[in-house]
Image (cartoon, rainbow, N blue to C red; front, side, top):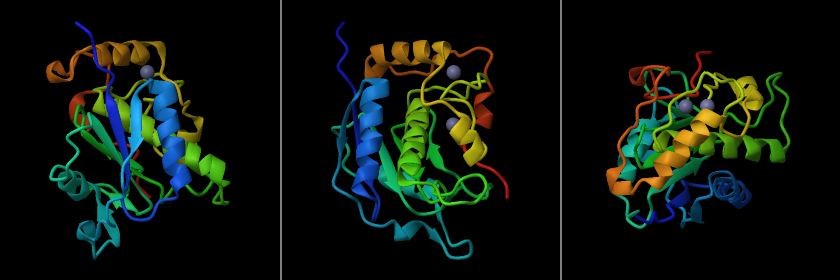
Length: 209
Ligand SMILES: [Zn+2]
Ligand SMILES: [Zn+2]
């Protein structure tokens, strides 16, 4: 059985620097060896604004993605500069449904170093690419990894994110390769022993202020 190379779409929601999209797509192509395309931007997701929090509800945006025409793509990553949240957490860097099709990456909180000083653009884009690859890992059914030197390690904040490498540990890398060899129709969660239970993983990159 031959396996078709998966196609990933990267789409801006509202205004996002084109260079950020290019860095993200280059990393997806380079590190995960997937085909990837930048899609025409979608509108600013005003519909997801929570007026009390002045933040955007990640779940509502992901839900809205389901009605968009992304039929040619196996996975789609939305990138935005807005502050994302899910109801029980202060904010999230990214959001993805385990084994799903859609993920989000927010650049809103990637612009400052742990000490509060502004970060150079190159670091900001690298962080965005790291969050995108991590979320894409979730879309391919990877769970959080206990290995600190692994892209799938849970990041609680910017410092964690900066300390997390952009590459997968051997275990997660093998798991991903196995997943990518399967036909998309047969994509079922594989058993990953010795991992954090699934029910704790509906979201990530969250931290309380
Ligand atoms: Zn790992
Ligand atoms: Zn995660």
